[in-house]
Picture: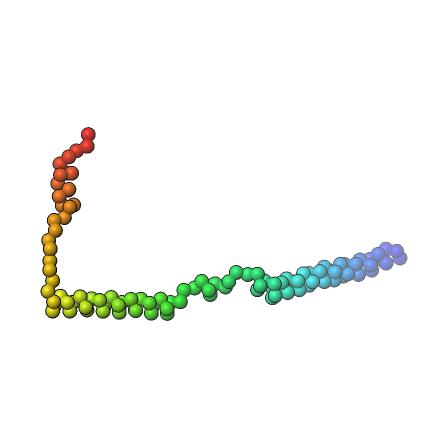
Length: 107
């Protein structure tokens, strides 16, 4: 009879052990959920959205710069067509240095 009682107690002890383990796991999951929901938001770094460039703004800046460049080129073209331009020819220093250096060898 004693052996029958020990067999009956075993399933109860495993059930109780399983219930305790599941309760501990549920408590830990609750702690993790609370931490993720409240604490993590306050201490995390800014979201990645803050680091993603605004492509619309970048395109607008490029278009604005292109308009400014086109206005300057138009003004230059108008000046070249209507105005007078003084041209002064200057001999390039590099052109003078190249033949003299080519003739010399280092020893």
